[in-house]
Image: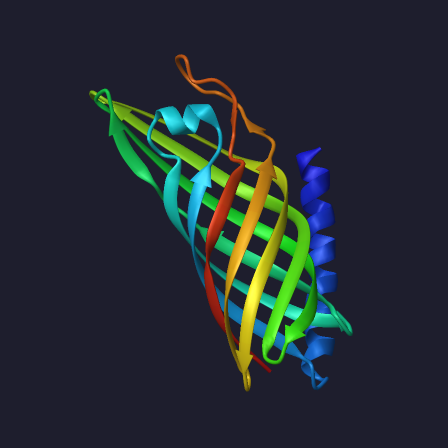
Length: 195
């Protein structure tokens, strides 16, 4: 199932890159942005290990495929760590998202956007307890919905975003680690440029 999803995602990404190239040749072209979000994982197991809150950074690119519709990619990273009951735990989480969004203007220079998409997310957990180390990693299928408020001036824009992401389970590992999800919500800001 996951291999089939990865294959389909690669096909869509290749199609998306074609849309990006086509977008570069039009006046409405391409938008690139960097974002920083406060991120909270919603799974109780992650929360019980004091790993649920972190800073998430990402880069995204969008190309216009219709007058008010954009298609794009986002790749991000968060890497929280904590020590609970003499167990040192670290998470590496890398979402790779394919999103579509509708963008509309509601005041001069002010835009709103709503959208969603599919994601393929890498999650790695490392636990060190005493002299023993345990590591578990997997690729998780997910989906997300989001909203943005953007202010544009010339070719530059800044804004706020809220995203809710849902993922499938990562299988539990050694000991009493149960299967758990990397579902999360994010709230933060972004800044970028339009070409």
